[in-house]
Length: 65
Image 1 (cartoon, one colour):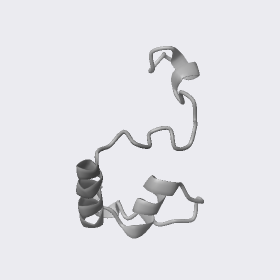
Image 2 (tube, helix red, strand yellow):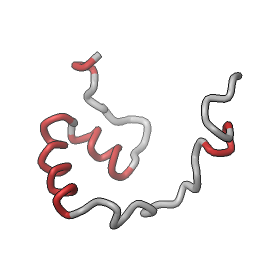
Image 3 (tube, one colour):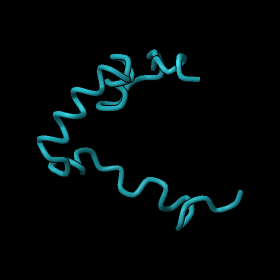
Image 4 (spheres, one colour):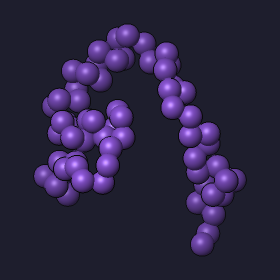
């Protein structure tokens, strides 16, 4: 398989540490995300994006593909 990521599979998931990106977005950016997520994501998809989830959720993207 050709190398897709710089550093190959060793760099695909950098650290896998939860909460690593906390405090990166501004309050304004978070407000914009919260305002927009309900318009473009199903509730299950938003949960998956924010928290991860089991494999038995409906992501709600069928309308886009």
